Image (cartoon, rainbow, N blue to C red; front, side, top):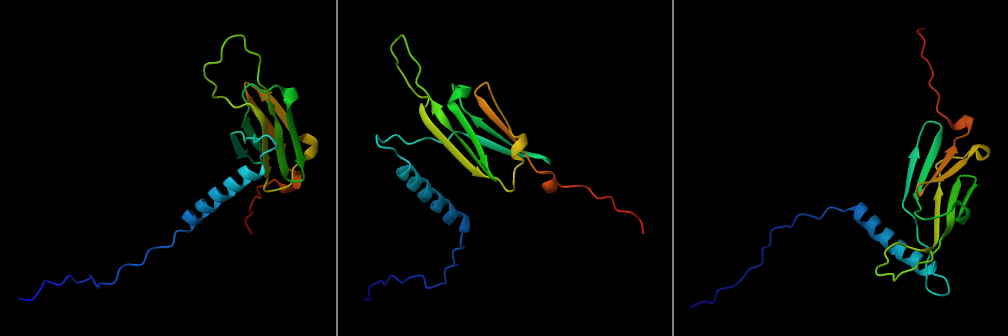
Length: 153
């Protein structure tokens, strides 16, 4: 009596599709870990990156950063060419009672972004209100899009 033989399925398997976004996500995670390790100072505390929204309008870029509990004296906003840098420190406040839970971050923060075009440095405005820093960066006149009327020939 012959023994049963288990055969492999020899049908060709469909090729897996290449997913470039998956590779980019992995690369981004590795880069974030590298930046976390290199940004640490001597006592192991790394500056954190605040949550930021960037909006582009026809005449400006508007950057909103969440900075709860920060005083305006503790924030530094700089623009060089097309790069915006927001840095500062959230200081630990004096407490009278026993701190049972601490979840809010304190310490230094640092955020850098390169804008897609040059900025009009003379008209930049920064406002800190209700824990949100709003930086309005106007575009130069020559970078603004203009509507051109088409006339009949």
